[in-house]
Amino acid sequence: MGTKRVQRGKLLFLIPFIMTVLSSQNAIAQNHYMRIARVVIDSAQLENYKAALKEGMHAAVSKEPGVLRLSAVYDKEHPTHVTVFEIYASEDAYKLHIQTVHFKKYKEAVKNMVKSLELTDVLPIALESKTKE
Picture: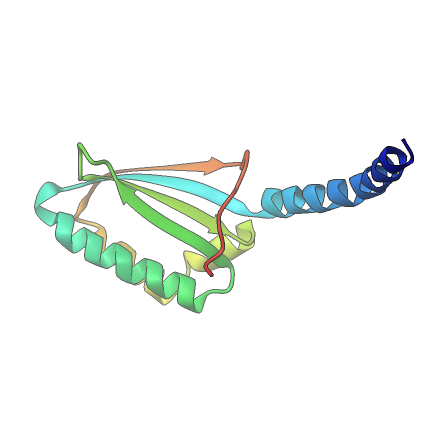
């Protein structure tokens, strides 16, 4: 019985610490600016679009501290339907991003390739990932 009391005491002591860590991670995630871009590409321009997107994303992530993550995927059944997941340190970081030379170069390169573009600001429910080892 004494052992259970000590273990329970340790657990009760750790609960405030765990809650602080979890709430601070959630607060950090809530302060990020996130959006999803849904893009439909002209099928004749798909490979050119992919190349321009990769180049622009690489430049943004490598050159801009406020660009935290950019991920692009396409629909397996409809390869011209591209979704880009964007995470920025803040809305201001996003505003700086769209003023950069590399972003403007990307927009100019793809302007005749994009059939439609839908931008949606989103808020996280949960962000989980494994770190590279």
